Length: 297
Image (cartoon, rainbow, N blue to C red; front, side):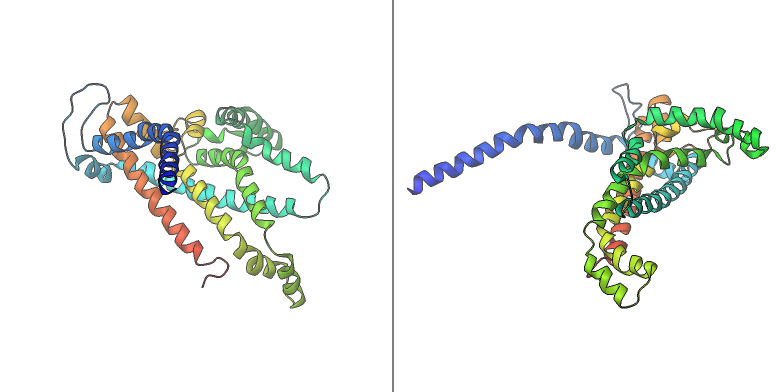
């Protein structure tokens, strides 16, 4: 009997290994190996094409900290990320609260709100390019508003806000759905008890609703921050980093250094540096918000 059980246990382990082996191999090939090799090449001067390269140690990372173009791209990316995250969180939470209430045609409105999320960034970029190039200036001329009569993407001081607007229109639906899932878990009896105790709408929102939404808020902030720091598609489609490099993000700079200037080792070092920034920001977000959740002091 014991031998039979051992055979079944070994058979089960073998089945488990055979079933997980393909996924493990693909994960190692397409994730582990690129990460490890990229980390290695970040210490070299490899151009990404030839087989020859030199090991230069920390020179790439030292140069990053002295590279004014990278520091400008980092500043732009952090500002863009902060602005996008705040606007997306506020708009998506507001839309979730609205759709969580008793309104007519709720299912239809939800589908309309979610429609931009299924569009590709190529489509979104093309739509907003035409909007800022033709539609908005025409409206500005009709209303006699000077600054509105120009394409805001052609102005170094306003181009970022055009990109943020496109990102806001396309990106708020998914965090809205996550917030709606969190709102469905807020106990109604706590709202009723707070109302009986004399709490107003804002007090109930901040002291009852928000603590229960902390897990969803953490998820949204981490995801939105990652997307903001990795922004690439929209900027390429709308401004390509211009005008005069005013909207050049870290992602675009890494692409230009690695694939256009053939500085693959340097571009890889920039990507590793960006990864650590994302990790630090995400950890800080999670630690701060975890303290404010339900049952946390």
